[in-house]
Length: 87
Image (tube, rainbow, N blue to C red; front, side, top):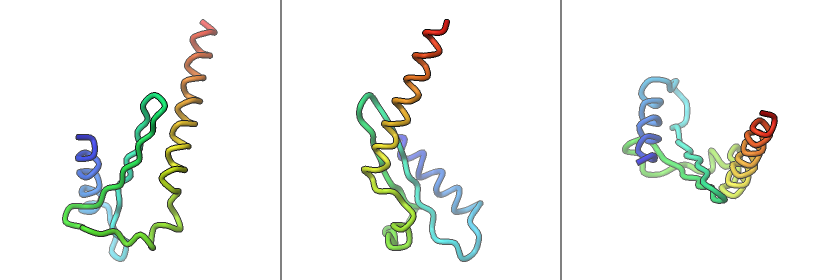
């Protein structure tokens, strides 16, 4: 369900925001739940392949993204706990 929303946004971006000469957009869905992180990629409608060699130099690995998501989640949870403790 959520991945459909990401595809919709990627298609919207392609139709309304892209400038001539730009590479096709890709969507990256990042989710965190408890101690698990999920990273999914999506392409615009009708595009069957991604020219990964164009993107690899700029993208972190899936594991790096998962690690960062969980790190940020932990920081947010600590901030929430600290703010509750101050009250």
